[in-house]
Amino acid sequence: MDIDFVRSRFIKHFDGTTGAIYTSPGRINLIGEHTDYNGGYVFPGAVDKGITAEIKPNGTDKVHAYSIDLKDYVEFGLNEEDAPKASWARYIFGVCREMIKRGVDVKGFNTAFAGDVPLGAGMSSSAALESTFAFALNEIFGDNKIDKFELAKVGQATEHNYCGVNCGIMDQFASVFGKEGHLMRLDCRSLEYKYYPFRPEGYRLVLVDSVVKHELASSAYNKRRQSCENVVAAIKKNHPEIEFLRDCNMDMLNEVKETVSQEDYMRAEYVIEEIQRVLDVCDALERNDYETVGQKMYETHHGMSKLYEVSCEELDFLNDIAFDCGVTGSRVMGGGFGGCTINLVKNELYETFITTAKERFKKKFGRSPKVYDVVISDGSHRVC
Ligand code: GLA
Image (cartoon, rainbow, N blue to C red; front, side, top):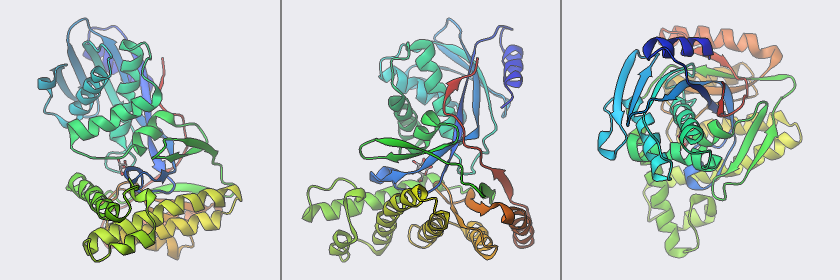
């Protein structure tokens, strides 16, 4: 993101003075989708695209926020009843409230922010926005007393309490904890994590964006989560010790096959298999076995499409093209219902794959998909 651009807008929009500039990235996820809220593993990394904000306390009890991209300006107070209507401003308001709930004495500030993480592409632009403000407010008003995990939880709680999405912790974790050249395996039950250097020699990671944005994504997402909880409740009757689908195996799931709906069964089957796939991919990476990594990515796509049912025609089509071109691994990335596929491609196949994907997609859907090369980058930080 061009820092000078954000600064020039901040100066123009407010009183000519400058504040501090903070940035947080969007994320990719190699494997482990819809596993976070099931206590399972995820394997994300931060990207070189994100949200950048200039922020300066303004001596009042109001936030004056300017979205440079939307050219929209909103003012709001910091009490619970002051929630703004504009959805972009609710993220900032939610972060302020969650920080206040954690004892940070947030006061009024001026801010202008912009982003280059594509909206609705499944790269977590909203987590980037939340993490930017959580990180900044902690530094500006909180003496950095909130630890990094709690900052990620501030973003997650903002989604739950102010934006209506019962998301897991993956996106905010990746945005806050990202490290250049590294993926992170997070155990979402214990919150233990490990950095994995990721520079696959001879391969590239590329995102192909279907540019499909699903209108009902948040209610469909919450419904998936509910299915998982229904199955856990059913299994708990025989196995009171279990807390998440992470704690279950296929035998336990089959014990309740007749008591849960067919749909809930399929959702749980996908999750149990997906959690194992993350571990398999980690093992394969230790051996530099990218063929296995790719194979698991295709299996994830199949599960997300046929069992979890969060793919769509355009994403299935992109996945088929990848397979036809001999791409090593490909799958829908993020929550689904639109957005990108993530593809592990041999260097020598890259050009053919991208050209073919663009041509065939355009022929079928009348528009070109977008393509983003993945550059794995650092998490939230102050720029200046
Ligand atoms: C969204 C959510 C995450 C995670 C993914 C699916 O990005 O915000 O918590 O559940 O979907 O893996």
